[in-house]
Image (cartoon, rainbow, N blue to C red; front, side, top):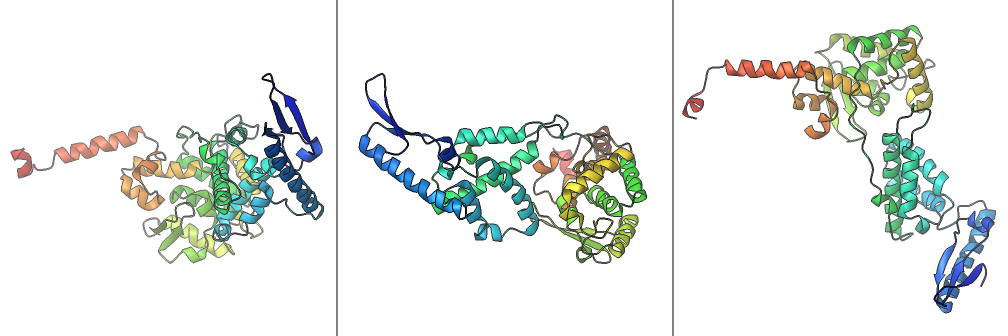
Amino acid sequence: MKYVIAKTLKSGQVSYYWNPPKKVQALGFDPERLGSSYRKAKERADELYRMLVAARQETQRGLPQPGTVRWVLHEYKKDDLWKDLDASTQRVYEQALRRIEDSFGRYRIEAVKYQHAKAFYLKERAPTKRTGGAERFGQSASIIRVARVVWEYADREGYCSDNPFSKVRIKKPENRQAKWTREQVYKLIEVAEANGHWGIATAVLIAFELCQRQADVMQLSDAHFTSDQIQVRQNKTDALIWVPLDEVPEFRARIIEAIRRSSATLVTQPDGTPWRDNMNQFRHEFSRLKTLASIPKRLTFQDLRRSGLSEIGDAGGTTDEMRSLSGHKTREILAAYVVPSTEQARNALRKREAYRKLPKHASDDVA
């Protein structure tokens, strides 16, 4: 039997092992225990060798080897599951799929077990110099969710019988408390405009004033606006938000000017191309502008949404009023975005005092 060795155990029983050399393992064939039955061991060894021959032929033809993770990813992207995703979601998935392929591409999909999935998650979550020593909770969670989708597809198609990523426990970070002040927001806008980045300034303004996610801000175009409203179809939840602009005339004027300057989208690079197609450079420029504006490094673009919602809370806005703007499906999810403050506590006390001064109803007297 090719690449099979026999070992005599302490019990005296003979056990067989598939033990291919490193060059074979590089094709995705890891060592495997075949058991103590010679007949079953031979059947499995012959099957593995046939698969190896096919793999070598596929490799010579430059095609993904059937049964490997790389091949499954290739097949997944031909399925309607992939084709039905919108373009922005596909871009996010592509990043995750590259990370998955880099780690597991050569392995046969059924060989990926829970311990491999967990180790992969912990590696993706680990801090890096780029994150300033902070764990990458969001990025790693996103990659694992995409991996779950791929393995669900593979299970459904019969390529494997287990989804190891479904068992990985994703750790949620503590709710961020970082908030931009209005002064910091408009200082960054001023610096961005002074450095020729009108598009970044517009993105910051929309994220803060309309409390929208970065991905939704990046896809806005003049088609989403009427003379007095803005329509946002949120990618993450598919929520449709209509925001009246007559209550914010200065913001409306800014949007009209952005439409006049823009081409396909409102948030464009200095050369007129959309920033959404060059997000790595967007993050670089955003960080550089923050430094020029003396904005603390801990404040991120994603914090703008939370900061805008917290300001509304400070102003006495109710949870449902904020949800109508932000698109959050539940009050519980929204709670993670609104940072409690002294001003909100003061508003609560003011509202209670105002209520107490109202004339009592007959039902109150009866009670």
